[in-house]
Amino acid sequence: MVEQRKLAAILAADVVGFSRLTGADEDRTLARLRSLRSDLVDPTIAVHNGRVVKRTGDGALVEFRSVVDAVRCAIEIQNAMVERNAGLPADRRIEFRIGIHLGDVVEESDGDLMGDGVNIAARLEGVAEPGAICLSEDAYRQVRSRLDLAISDLGETRLKNIVEPMRIYSLQVGLPAQPRPVAAGREQPAAPAMPDKPSIAVVPFANMSGDPEQEYFADGIVEDIITALSRFNQLFVIARNSSFAYKGKSVDVKVIGRELGVRYLLEGSVRKSRNRVRITGQLIDTATGAHLWANRFDGELADIFDLQDQVTASVVGSVAPKLEQAEIERAKLKQTESLDAYDHYLHGVAAFHRYDREANQEALACFMRAVECDPNFASAYGMAARCYAQRKGFGWIADLESERAAALGLARKAAQLGRDDAVALAGAGFAFVLFGEIALGNAFLDRALELNPNLAWAWHIGGFAKALAGEAEIALRQASHAMRLSPQDPQYFAMQGVVALGHFQAGRDEEAYSYAEPAMREMPRFGLAAGVAAASAAFMGRGDEAANAAMTLSRLDPALRLSNLSNWLDFQRVTDAERWADGLRRAGFPE
Image (cartoon, rainbow, N blue to C red; front, side, top):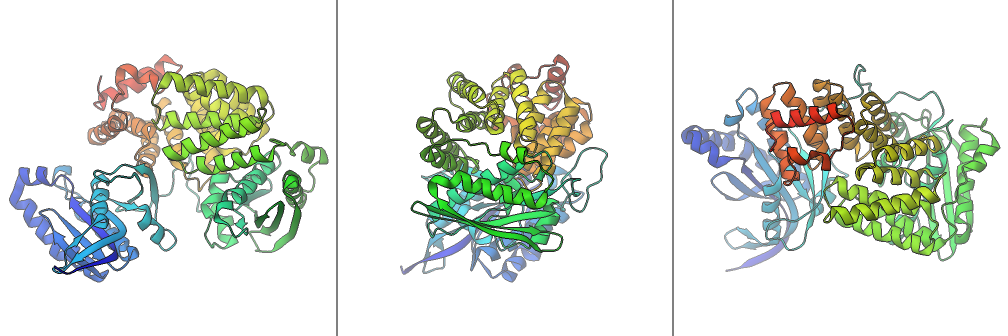
């Protein structure tokens, strides 16, 4: 038998609940499936240059010339299925789930395909949600800059019979594009409104070092400049996560200005060579595209903090000339004098923002190395504590008591050393809140926001802390403000979850569900959104939606029960805890 090895884009698809559908009405189901193949599936595959390799009773394996063709085909099919299922009861809908992978395959003489490329595509299809498309990281790389997609990063996932865990991405299609909800009573504007003070975004600087390994350093410089600018009450500064949404993309500055709702944009480059550093910066008016200034800052690596201060002062002097010099001096807060500690810290920040379990462990190790180099490095202690909080939030903790002790120890150290360091205090506050010290966490988060009124993730976590403390309306305001500070944030779904929780506590179940449902759709692993969606839908009498969300929450945390809810969310008001438990009970959550 002649075999040929090649690289191919493989699409695997099947029907969700096929056995259930045929068991209920086999003749009707098979007739509908045959009609779908002849009228929709096969013509769409042909249009996008696909080749059906094999069929199963309810599925197919298809080869494409490119991942772009495969994804376009999958989107077209899934969108068409939503239209065809419209008006049908849930038990009669035919829904596909699809997996797409770019990998090595072996083509046999009869045209059949074998190998890991096929196996991985099939496993991706198996973990896809109904109506969704799962992409491997190799496939995602091929389409992320070519297609305008709303993608959820599902992180590192173990696929059945695949040795190494794989990073996978989910594309939920078939639903009309919806604007992200805003606070109750407000209409969604076409773009964020301009603030009533100078507003600025700092986009990622280009790494000109010629070494991809230095990417973390360039990103760290930008993050520090954002942090320095954020300390000025007179400025409105877009959060790091939204600014970094434009990393690696060629986007017109006017478009960025409209999407983020800012007047000014800072862009530039960083070149690090041995012991020398060069930072260039250009400040642009997004309304006109005009350059307000461009400058170059050269120095020794040992002078890096002074160079950052020079960039910050130049920006501030251009966009807010009435700021007092004393405020500029106060913004020059040195995190550490140890360059080794600073380097480990930047590595840790880069890893933390990948938002998966392995990256979390890597980030924690980097922050701990930073404090070994400088035992007084408050921000590193705060970020280490934040790592533990992230682990608990995503259910990555193996031993709750030991990790709680470690997290709170780091949080206390961060708070002790960083009385005037917003990052240290916010990280400490996050850990205190997640591990049950809610009042203390609230106090540190409030102080962090006094020090840095533009720290979006502190507004978001602060809102969550306020919700647990029973202050629903304050929680809503804080989480909504986080959304405005970071409208392109990869963790926008988490901010939506806090807004949903605030509405739920206030008894506004429709508003709660309107935020929780899209958050759950964007991040299927987000337990808070699933819980709020289940409880609010139950109170509205929407039994199917409530039951589905409750099942999602149980799948995310199989050990969670109504009897141990306080181990997860420790509401300080009895009425909040009772309403939460009652809603989940009505949704069918286990006792």
